[in-house]
Image (cartoon, rainbow, N blue to C red; front, side, top):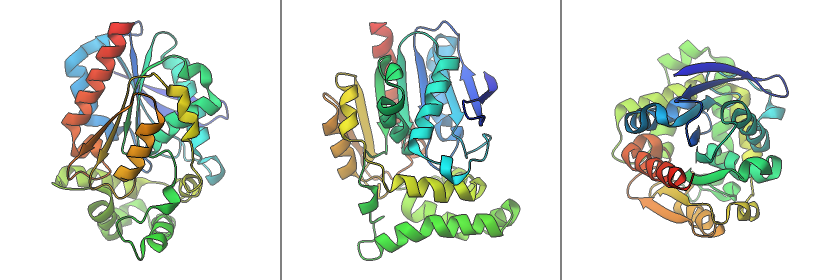
Length: 297
């Protein structure tokens, strides 16, 4: 394992972690969820390392405005900007060979924006795993509260961003009541593992206010269903939890139907954080995608 500081074209610094041989047949890149960081995938990284050792090139990173990457101003908190960053991660750490891309939530949306900004990267994609994500229509989501959903959807990012501006991180860690409510009631399904919920709460507490408000604004206009035609024929799995109220099963069905040949998996009882809640199922799909890409390499 090696960690890197990658400075992308606008000068922003991204924290990147790379595993495996530089000359491995296939590179798998894992793009994490909004307000999270590369630890979103920690179960999958462990499983993949146990399965392939150094024979898989595996890349994770903290998206701009998240984790150990640079804080981003609101104007740069957009899905196309994340897609350009992903392209530069590929340019630096996966210069040759087929790619398997996996994205959770906004990470999946980042992959959906690649045809707009980096069609050359799309041409190398040999497999996709899209986890708890959406190709558009997020401005209609009710978060499981049919009557007050639209108000809640608008206010929650503002409340979290305001807390981040007014309170220090240590103060929020001492009293994470709102963050804990969001995790327990909106982000995660059943059964709820406390260690996983604790990780997501800490990621929310650690998130910069501009990351919350900037990406929220951009996500309300996210619509990339038509562009998914660029992935026609790419072996694709779309995964969703039956209890996901952020990117619900109806969004997963729409997404899967837009990619010719895509396979849809609905996981009973799970919420939005499938890499944590259903880690074994997600890991199995990543292994299957890598094996297919290796067989075709």
